[in-house]
Length: 203
Image (cartoon, rainbow, N blue to C red; front, side, top):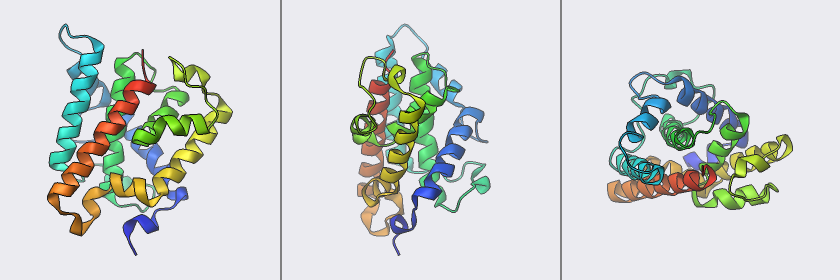
């Protein structure tokens, strides 16, 4: 059975929650989301350029190194999912949260948490928001309610559970893909996730 066939919606939500909590609290051997954001916020460049640099750096890093399963803390995962898959969700969520934080969003706000998960859908993030009945505006978060937040989470978990999206986020798990294909998948997916975060968490 392929790894993508064994991923259920029920196993995705706890893994996403674990990953986001790890983003807020930090993991051994990894920069915190606040350190990551502050590192790209220095200097006199505008926020747009700072965020672009963050996305570009993270995409290159993911393309070169793939999932960082050597980070501490993954032994405490609440569900049985491939560590490489969950570690990449963690890396992407940290980038997304850093973008939100750089734009002055409260990372402890449940709406921000939900929208961070939505960004994991990459190019499909905005359609997912529309599908949940959330109006797209300058500050999308203002239109997120408790009801729409629940709908968003259900949709995100369903899409991440689908073979196509899981295959992207777990590109390194495909033995026959090869290093070049794996790097392209990881880098391209990371770039798409970052671009979605930049739009969704506009100042």
